[in-house]
Length: 495
Image 1 (spheres, rainbow, N blue to C red):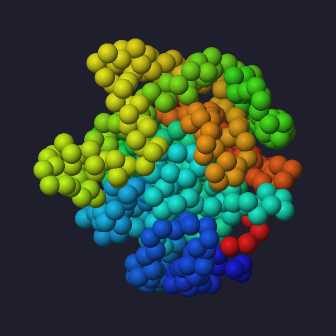
Image 2: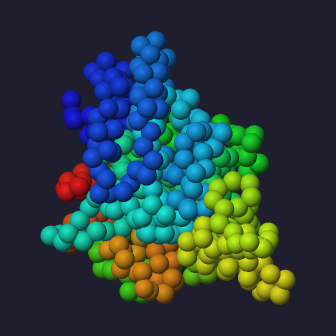
Image 3: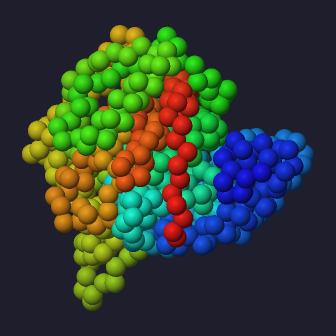
């Protein structure tokens, strides 16, 4: 059997059920790996005592023969998910010391299925970022290196800690959230798999909100089969979330035949951007060829409102963020700034929020407040909502024409150096989301998976976009692409 940290979720599940290893042994191996990987800054709150307790319970369950697929599987949890009694800061100074008295629905489902939490994972503050550099814990670091360079690279964001931990084999899977690409972009930059389900497939209850109409949780794993297994454990109707869909959750793993003969894959012409690196375009063309060879039909399609997606997203998301983050006022929970004699409530709010929020969060709150203000609501926010409806209609028309899935690049570039965009116009960073935000605006499922490497050895990924509520079919198409791409590379250990 492979080293315990080299197993996949499916492999570990089978080994546990066959008695070839134990949940305790599997957990100890991953606790050791996570504890020795401080240079990656992926885990920000370790929970070894809880992990060992959960592992012992999983072994007892395995012995009884009633263990579901995730039983005994060591995972990491993004710091955006509230976990009872464990720090849950959303990587923000303003939530320093916050330990929830409740469990998010997603973590509760995972723990009920027997999963073992190793700890909380790094992320961009309040999930606002594409490089994991806005975190109060400091940036997470990509385990991959570019050629012979020792320069630290971004693992992407906002689920950068999740991506880095999975890619470095510190855990078998991790939870992520995706508001504009925050699962798929880091997955593509780290050679891992990340799926954003249809909006409403996974409960948002107990996840610290960024933009409520866009946020969706999903799994980050090392292959498509593992993503199917973990997504099934996370998904399902939740009456505590008014946007949760009351739909049955299929057996996603059972749908992974890899057979897509007769299906139609759409190739949107609007995703061919000026200045896109040749290697990204070449990888896209390779993906098209792989799916054609698998028996799928390839059809050029148009999604004409794609060019308006980024500006619409960066009106809607900050508007919702400014509303959601209004609750962090220094009164109910979290950090409160030290006050001077004579300071009143207004000064407390101002100082607490100025100290507690980082620059990017402050920028987005101010943008959101501006576009929601009386003089600009119609000019910006309402226009963005109309554009969103047009983007959704573009996808509906494509699927109505017989397209089964859409293939696009996942990111406009491979992983870049940490700090490379620190002095740049914020819009340069926002462009990292150019291929992913449309999926959130339309509420569709999307998956990113690695299909090759650039000339420096860095992973490059492609994105598949599916019909609403058809994650099983989307995962199957991704399985087909994964099988043909044959991506087996991993980061050479330096940490």
